[in-house]
Structures are given as structure tokens and as C-alpha cells.
Image (cartoon, rainbow, N blue to C red; front, side, top):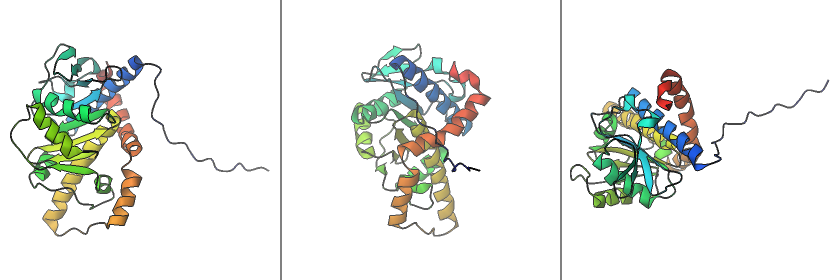
Length: 258
């Protein structure tokens, strides 16, 4: 009897699109899902916070959540498109000036990324007050090892493009940045990736705060931390890690897709 060799299951792959219209719908639905998840995790804080996704056709503009609308209510159809001059070119809601000042400069300086996320999450802004980078305390934290920057300044609400340029410079080519006395910022080649890195970074801030409150943490050495970053910190792993969360929130709140 012939016994077939064991076939290794193929991991899911990122989708491809037949047109910019199809890709735009996809990005907007992922953006709405990310905002709903951020609400579910308590990352919303009044009217603060924003996630953006570059439009696949009009590359000098991005989709963003409307200013003043709760993350937990946003549907794909509520999102607005803003150009790099700060003008709302699609949608009937206002744009958060800070969202424009920060995200327009990040999208302009990083043509390799599609999405960026920033909110005033509790552990992110708590950790940011220390003005320090995260340490390689765990396998999960290694995703950010030598791959996040520090904007070591605070001058008030970011309303000027020049301040956005300074934040973009601190981000550099990394996947994330800690904005001192402000919070976290993450980016990705997909909305999924940017959202997952934010969720993960927030949890790693919480973990390091807890660990340092309990004692002196033992750090992972450089070689092992670098290896782990390649294993768990790639754009694909960021995208893949978001998929179960997307499926969960869509099943629980299907109206977000409309």
C-alpha cells in the first residue's frame, strides 16, 4: 500500500487585486475593522487617535477615521479621504488636524508603507513618559528590537507639518516609534500589519512596565533577539497575526464592512 508523504499546509497569503477599486474596498474594510478592534481593546480616548491607509490609486492621499466619531461606530463608508494639503476629497466629515500633520508627513516620507496607526493608549502613553525604547524582554518584544525609534520631545498637540516631519525622521525606516509623553506610532505595508504592531507594542509596553515594577528583568541577548525579530517581526508575520482578529471582529460586528 502506498502511503502518501505528509503534505505541509500552506500558510495564508496576502491577497492580490484586479483593480485599484477592489483594493480600495479591501483597505477601507481592514481600516474599519482595525478601528473597531482598537475600540474593543480600549485604545480610543475621546476624540484622539487615528489610523490611516494610503489610497491605492491616488497615492498622495489617505483614508482616515472621521474626527469626533467613536472608533466603535465606524464603518468603511464613514472613512474620509484626505490629500497631502489637508483637504477632505471624499467624505462628509472633518479631519483631525493632528492626524493630518502626523500621517501626511509619514506617508510622504515612507512610500514603502501603506498604513500608520497612533492612539493615546494607556500603556503606550505611560511607557512613553519614560523616554526610553522597549527592551528585548520576551519573544514578542523582539519584534521591535532595533526596529523602533524614539521621538524624544514634546511640544503640545501636533498641528504643524514641521512637527510631523520631525516625527517621521524619528521613525526613520523602522516599524514603530515611541513619541515621548504622547504615545505609540506604528506603520506597515498593509493596514493589517500596522494595526497588529500597534496592538503588540501596547502589550509589550504593559509587560515591561509590569516586569520592571516587580524587579530587574533579564534581557534576551543581542544575537537571539535579532534572530527572533526576523522570525516574528517580518511584515508577513505582522499581517498574518492580524488575520484571526479581523475574522473575529467581522463575525461579531459585520456592519463595519458596509
